[in-house]
Length: 314
Figure 1 (spheres, rainbow, N blue to C red):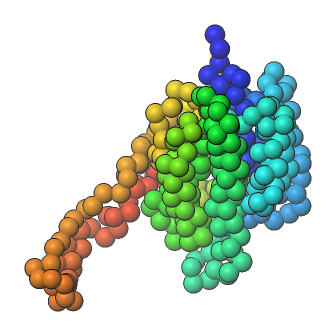
Figure 2: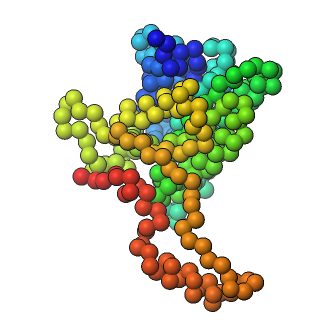
Figure 3: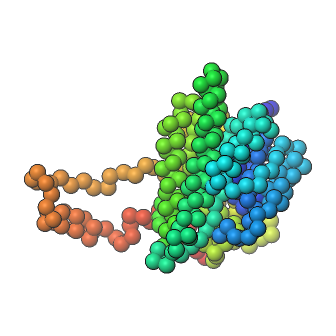
């Protein structure tokens, strides 16, 4: 029986470690040929010397298991590097079918302490990095469709975060970038649907090098053979599904995933609506309408998504 992704090729960015590694291995297990991208810097803040080793180790692991993979060393926040990454997939495997954007860094600071460079660097890697690869993948798919190819296949899986959904006091740069990625995803989904391409975003919870501080104190395995509920291996199968033909009807969606759970996040809805009694609102009228409305709601209720979805400390 054919594997779900047999005959398809994929790019996974930031795939040398953590989530990206698990995603690359899962796509390969499902039959895809994979370009494993990573800049290989040891610091989760993007510091340290770039290294080809992390990406090549994952690519070698895929090949050792009988799959097809090549590694790519590069900073996807650089526009021309992203172009070269897509070109590599096409030259190695004939075409690109799947793009998984995962690469990122953290430079945490409260908004009143954050420097311009700390803001710019995180926005650059996360948001611009997602745009760069998406742009060149979209150019590739659109050109094939315009050339008359029937049945162009394209899947984009982007990585957002619950820092965007629920807020994160010490991560204004990261939360903003992850919110921007959702906007990029929904816009891309609308723009590329007519070419046979879908774009979706996930908000994963996983214990990785980037999140070891965030999840300190949360439940860990008690037995040697027990899988960590925050293991990246809980996230990878959803990425494999979204990359597959089975997910042809899933487009422009945001899904939270962790520890054996997938939650579909609905589009924002109007919680309450007020109309002016006259032609134009006055300050006094807004005060009379809005102040009581918010006074009746529990503090923090609006953005309680993380607690609602069940993440609890020990």
